[in-house]
Length: 407
Image (cartoon, rainbow, N blue to C red; front, side, top):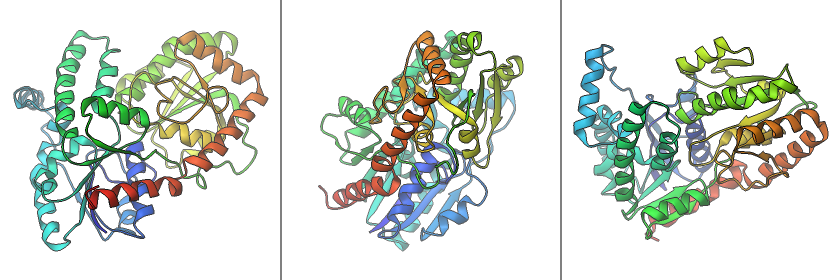
């Protein structure tokens, strides 16, 4: 099947969660489908060589470079005013400068490539190719319910200005998603929880669940899986607000209780584009080190015996948990962090939401090597059986085929 894949980032491995998902699923399906990818370098932070890698299994890849906005205060105020009057969600407005070039390339490929299916990754990307979406069967890959992420973040904003802006944007997001989900597309979510959330907005929508996955052959310990029990690890794209919020929450509200009993406890944060607020927090806190982007995260999993996922916002499912389980790491997560994954508290990982409970679960793992090994072994078996990309990809292939047949 000739399929046009549209994304707001360059699919890559390694990369952010959405980049990895799009890349791995495309790679698995490329053997039976002709793929062309239309992307932008605006989001995701693809590593060097990502374009060449993607071109090795796709028929063509076109990367649209976004215009550079003016750095002046006047320019920022102009963009803010433009957003206020546009009526668009902030995330959609930020992609607007790409619309003309995306539409031009998509139209050209319609004539030359004659695609049979359009896959759009992320609901916010759809306006960039709205004309083509009216001419082809559409599969919309909903990596996150964006309104749900925004709603959860608003609940934790400390600034009244940020809360006001967040609530205003939230209303726009919910209205946009409700309208899109009522269109005659096939929708794909990462979890049953997100499927139910989508159906709350559009009860008649056709929705398939295609879980996130992990490269189990890549993410595996090559030696004894035991790491340093005093070293904790958090991974993720740090410019993503829920990730930065999770680290700040952990350092300020959970780590003090851990350090009272394990003074050497230390949190290592690995991920691209950490915000200035997080770097300032690390400079003032000896229990935190922010490393930024690294070429290979596996050595960090091997050094740190415990992975923590103290997320208070987000949607979809967390590849960071799947990677940690594949590396046989013991994991402590909030329920939001583990949302949508078929994991059992006490069997594959430990779950805690309140700061005190989260600290106690981490301390229990620090003191109990047997528990760490049991959780790590169970987690590794789970991801090999259920979450390897080779087992996940056929579910997306089925959604593509059904959409193309109008089922």
